[in-house]
Structure formats: C-alpha cells, structure tokens
Length: 194
Image (tube, rainbow, N blue to C red; front, side, top):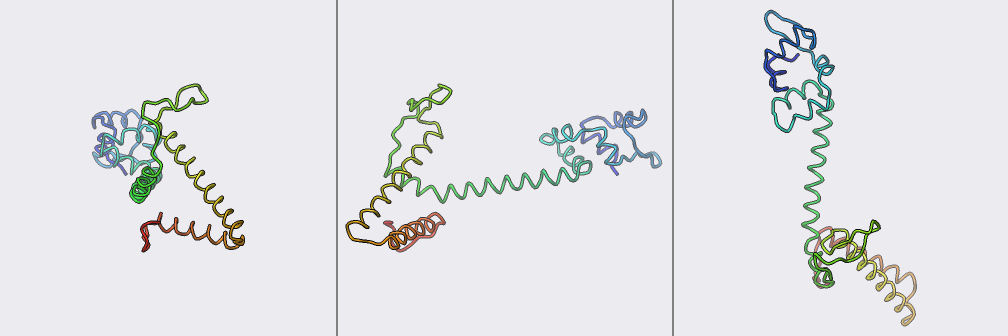
C-alpha cells in the first residue's frame, strides 16, 4: 500500500491534491483511521506507465513511487540500464585494447583525407567529408581487404614458386589468424615485430 505523501512527492503535487482525488473518486484508496492508503493497481489505472516514468530523471520520489506502482517495468528498466552500462564499459575496454593496434595501423596506412575535405557523394547527393566516421572506417576496411588479397597472392606465389601444398598454405592462414586473435585478445608473444 502507498501513502498519500508518497503519491504526492512522486507526482510532484500537494498532499491536498491527492486527498481531493481520493475524496472525489478520481483515485481509489482505503481509509485506515485518518490515513489514506492506495493500492498500486489503483495508481496504475490513474497514471499511465509513460507519465510516471517520464518524470524519473528529475525526482528521486518519482523513482520510489515507480518502483511500487510498476515493479515489473521498473525491474526491466533497471536490467536494460545495467546491460547498457555493461555494454558501454565493455566497448570502452575494447577500445582501450584496440587503441595501440589502430595507432600502428594509422602509422602504416595514414588516413588520406582532411576533416573538411569532400571525399565522395552519398546516394542522397550530400557530400561525405573526411571527418565522417563512415568514411574513416570505410577507408580502413578497404585497406584490410587489400591486405587480405595481398596475403592470398603471396600464398599463391609460395605454392607456385616453391611447390607448397594447399594443406600447408591453409596452415599458414590458420596460424596468421591465430596470431591475430591472440593479439586482439591482449596477449603478447615473444616477438613484438609481428
């Protein structure tokens, strides 16, 4: 059961207003002596979910009322918030791990565009600029594809020139992929030049 005071604080109205709602039947409650008590389901009928949860950012009292009136939705919101927070923390950690690799890539393959330089046109006709994140990532994704093709050509050359068998080139590819996975996972081997 919820008190008049809790409803008033949670909705940012006076206690007199809540008592008026109770007396006029707009809000249903039970009187115990001189005190009114309101069931959560009665408040759910009066206050839509979105109205109550829309005020959570400004009022701790609204949060406390929301927990009592909409406990299941509150729990889901908390779980979603925790998951989002976890994702943000995980992304920050991944970026921290990736930073040295991205810095090394930028040294080996300098980004060729200035921030205000028009790189190409979008499908809508609007320009893509050098500081657009999509352009930046697209450039390095293209570089990755080029390097993958170059690696495959080197393996073909090994096969032809030195009669290396397909099984052995497959093993070279797997080994290179394993090294990359270990590095991305943050493990460091004995040879820093790889």
